[in-house]
Image (cartoon, rainbow, N blue to C red; front, side, top):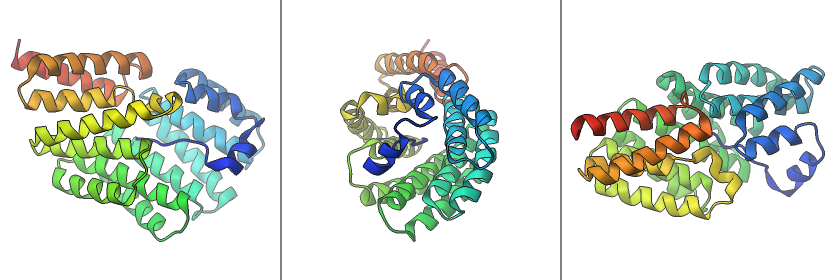
Length: 276
């Protein structure tokens, strides 16, 4: 759900040789515990209201969330948000992106209504802005909204938001991937499993086309969506295989506490109970 990436040539050049390079590289490599440790060390070493200290807090929050440490991640986002607001201003896309990322971590804590409200606000603010960063931010916030609506059982609303976001975001990139996975979740929630499986297969094509470092945050997500669809279609053996694959890769990549690891484990238990 969280999108952290360099933002164009100018920003990439400014990031080169900076204090956050090591932590960012570790995060991109999927080495989340090491990334968090490195980022927190940078944050502690920087003066108050330092830009790199703020970026380090952002990386630390993302890395904590990637390990399934939702409460820790939200607390770090809260700390970072104060600094981002002072440095960049409340309306800057970086500050708004931080709010979107924080909101999406709330879902890991079961605070779905709060995530819905915040993502709705950020998406509306971004939609009034201009430029590619605001457009991408609007899509990211809508992705968080899709997840929050699905988590509350409001699958038809989630489907509508996902389809609108996909219509607006036509680039075949990671954002399209996560939006298609959200749409698959919404369709599965409506027992439209054939359609959901089709979306999961499309998401798989997008996933395989991404650069390797962009795949790390979404490992196991396609398999989980496929397994849910296959189980709904009573294709039990295939569902069990996909769910087991999702569980194994999620535990290896994120740890057993991550929401996707937990979801895959619960799906395996449901499959086992229905078809011992």
